[in-house]
Amino acid sequence: QVQLVESGGGLVQAGGSLRLSCAASGRTFSRSEMGWFRQAPGKEREFVAAISRSGGNTYYSDSVKGRFTISRDNVKNTVYLQMNSLRPEDTAVYFCAAAPTRDYDYWGQGTQVTVSS
Image (cartoon, rainbow, N blue to C red; front, side):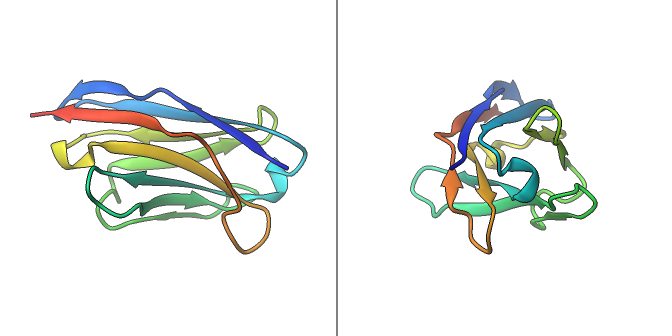
């Protein structure tokens, strides 16, 4: 079992930065691929970024590549999403998720990110 709690969301102007954190409890964090997803009002939830168990491999959607950076600390059981050069279209609820197997089985409650123009 993994419990995930996101933090760090808020209101920021376009061009600004935010750093999201996702603290995990449970024993499987270091054995889980971790991902960030987001859901904007009226839209489907979409993949943002993912990081392998060791942190050696990262993956990004085309819409955030070059602006967002995912990282993890397996000692602190925390995954981060550094978001730079934010745009109004980045406005969404951001969720972290854990995949101890092939699927993202565990999800956090989400944190709101609002980017004003």
